[in-house]
Amino acid sequence: MWNGIQAAPEDAILGLTEAFKKDPRFAKVNLGVGIYKNDDEQTPILESVRIAEKRIFEHQNTKSYMPIAGEAAYGEEVQKMIFGALCSRSATIHTPGGTGALRVASDVLAKFGHKTIWVSNPTWANHNNIFEASGMTVKTYPYYNASTKDLDAEGFFAALEKIPSGDCVLLHACCHNPSGVDLSAGQWKQVAQIARKNGWIALVDFAYQGLGDGLVEDRIGVETLLAGGTDFFIASSFSKNFGLYRERTGALTAVSSTPENAAVAMSHLMAAARVLYSNPPAHGGMIVTTILKDAELSNLWKSELNAMRDRIAQARAALAEGLTQRGVPMDCSFMTRQKGMFSFSGLSKDQVSFLRQEKAIYIVGSGRINVAGLTHGNMGYICDAVAEAMNR
Ligand code: LMR
Image (cartoon, rainbow, N blue to C red; front, side, top):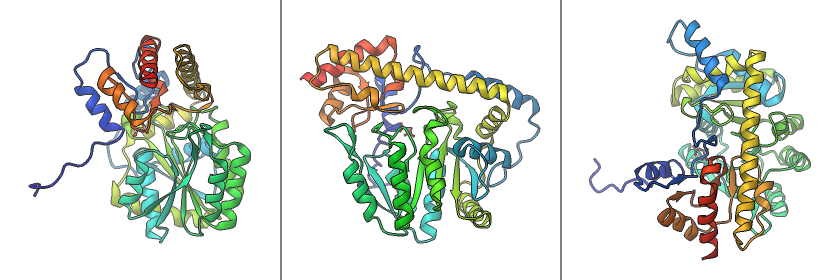
């Protein structure tokens, strides 16, 4: 079967980790995949997660199948987290990670004839693959202005105005991946107004709640779309904010106009999930539910999340300062304005490849640096190398 078949290309993000692992050099750094590291370069299990897991192991009494939509309690906790309260006109299912949520959404959208999705330029490297796998056509709208290192507001809103009714628009709720450039509250209002006027359907990728400005602050876009009264979807991931990467813990929420429509939406989300993976893996969802339903554990988790966010902010400031001190030919202050785990550094493809070949520093081809992987230990080496790449 495989004679004459070309190998599939390496994954733009996870493929880097595989290449990194094979690299024999001692002083190597993986700043590709978006994974939080503490100052010891470890991705620790959060204390709140450890406590929740102990409780689960003590009380769990079956490994029978999960419901297709996951446990109702999980869906309720997800809604409280993303909306601030339960929302009767929405339906939430537990999915394998944010990727699973996006794929269920795209299958459902395509099934009902919503076959064109608009994504930001640039966007997460896997978005295109997911939507294309559902048979959707992916188009791009302008988002990032490389010279101002900010939102291309004019291009963005002009494009949104032209997107026809029935098309879908992928938006990043916060911590835009890869640019770190987020919409302001006022800009979200404009987005919600245009969605309502033009009749396109938003699909909000909410993979970094709590890692931008805070759990509540980061949901401004979702709250604004909810108030706008249109039908839309939210794909949540708990990989980063709960550190549950390998547990594949996410959720898909469909917001509709009435509780009756939400029930119809739920039936179609479940039908799509049944085909894709039957029912979700239990463990990560149980951890999230256990934490969010317990006030004390929930407070512990919030303090751990805040600590991650603070460390990333410090790493951003140190990177900007380190590069400035080394005389790189650019104003680095934008790095401290970007939100989330990534800095869209402005490094060219050649510079990215120089860092990999000569310095064993792995970053995504777009120039995206995982700031959450910078530590006191590797900061000097990285600043030296990036400055050398930029000054060459
Ligand atoms: C990333 O963008 O690095 C993360 O979302 C991990 C992934 O699956 O690509």
